[in-house]
Structures are given as structure tokens and as C-alpha cells.
Amino acid sequence: MEIRSYLVPTALATLLHIIVLGGLLTHWIGDAEPERRTPRHIQARMIDLNALSQTPSSPESGAESETPPAPDPAPKPNETQQKQQEQQAQAEQKRREQQAEQARKAAEEKARQAKALAAKRAQEEAEKRKQAELAAQRKAQEEARRKAEQEAQRQAQAKREAQEKARRQAEAKAKAEAQRQEQARAEAQAKAKAEAARAAAEKRAQSVVGDMQSYIQTLVEQNWRIPRTARNGMEAVVAIRLLGNGEVDQATIVTSSGDAAFDRSAVQAVYRTERFERVAEVDPILFERRLRSIKVIFRPEGLRW
Image (cartoon, rainbow, N blue to C red; front, side, top):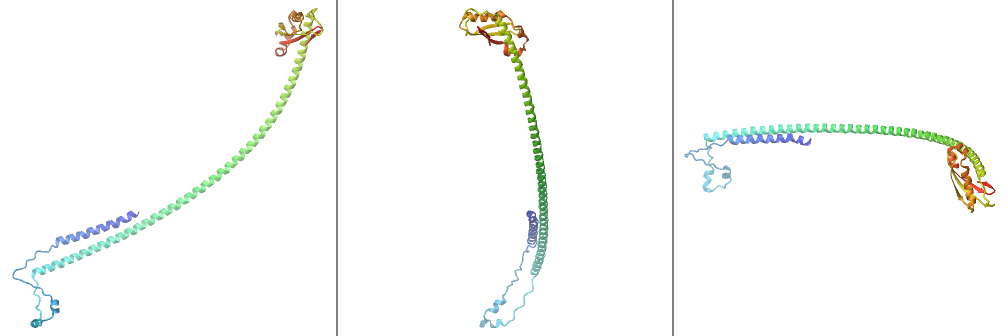
């Protein structure tokens, strides 16, 4: 803005200098002094009257000082023309000076107007900037207010969501606790039922196993031929391995009585029985767990488990 305000005065000042320089060049070229030609028979002498009046008079010059000065000779034609030309040149110079002065004043007026216009424009620009700044401030304030409202709404929404989340979590926790307690009760009941069933099954298994033990003991006792070398207090333990259909698969001494004939008679009693038919009626799982391999104790006074 400041650069634009200086351009107009600078251009006007340059134009004024060009006009003045052109006038001076025209005067110097057009008003060249003509060649003076003085006739040889005319001689002129200029006398300084003031100098003569101040010089003290001498006795010889007393008569001359009282004589009145002679009138100036009439101007010659060339001198008259020269004076007219000088007067015309002076008038032309004055006219040009007046034109230059007018141009200078016009340039100053234009510069003043340009300066005033630039000042007005600068003021308008400043006012525009001020209004723009105020608008920007209002916009910034409005944006800040809008953001503050949005932030407040966001925080309120986040608070509501947090409260809702906490409520749902509490409900879920309470529900999970209730489910856990219900599951614990169900598991306790199932465990109690399973324990009762297991106890009942174990009781039934014990009954079955006891019955099978009595059954096997009776058959083996019937088929045992006690040797004559047997004495009270002797004892032999035989491990019997059965098949699923009750047949004897293998019989071995695991604890010897110390008498070979006694041990051999115990093993022969098992092989002599060959098969325990009721074992085939036992549940396969129970058979595998409790009856696949059993031990029988042989004593002279009778079989013992």
C-alpha cells in the first residue's frame, strides 16, 4: 500500500522536471543571440557618472565639472532589436516559468489528491482489515463456543454411556453371580447325585464282587485237593486271570506257602475248575475293574480272600 502511494508523486515530479528541461532547451536553442556588427566609423564609450561624481575635482577640471552631461546617443537599430529580443526572451522565460509553476502546482495538487486517495484507501483497507479481524474474532469465538458446547455434550454423553455401561456391568455381574450360584447348586446337586449314584454303584459293585468272590471261592474250594503235606498256618496266594466268559486264562503263585506240593495243589484247583459261568453275567466295566484279575488265598482250614 505504501509503494502505491509513492508511485504517483514520483511520476508527477519526473514529468515536471521533463517539462521544465524542455522549456529551457527551447529557449536556449530558439533565442540564440544574433551576430553583432558594429560599423567601424561609430565609436561608443560608456561613462560611469557615479564614479565621476565621487572623484574629487581638480583645478584643471573645474570647468568640465560644471558642464552638463551630454544626452545619451540614440539607440542603434541593432541594439533596439536586441533589446526587443531580450524582452521577448524574458517574457517567454516568464511565461514558461509560469507554466512550470502551474505544472508544479498541478503536480503537487495531483500528488496531494493521490496522497489523500492513498490515505483514504489505506484507511479503507485498515477498516476492512479491522472488520475482517473482528469477523475472524467473532468466528473464532463462535467456533470456540460451538466446540465447548460439543465438548460438553460429548462429556455428558460419555458420562451417560459410562453410567449405562456401569449399570449393564453391574446387572451382568449380578446375573453372572446368580448363574454361578445356580450352576454351583446344580453342580452340587449333580455331584451329590453322582456321588449317590457312585455310592450306589459301588455298593452294587461290592455286592456283585462279593457275590462273585463267594461263588469263585465255593467252586475253587470244591475242586481243591489239600495235600497231606499241608499244615495249619500254611498259606499260598494264587493270582487268577479270567476271560470275559468266565474261563480261567492263567493262575500263578504270587505268595508261596513254602511247600511246593501245597502251592501246586492250589494252582491245580483253579485249573480244575476251568470256568466260572456266572462271571459272564457281570457288567464288562465292573469285570475289567474288579474281576479280570483276582487273588485267592489258600489255607488248610479253608480258602480265604
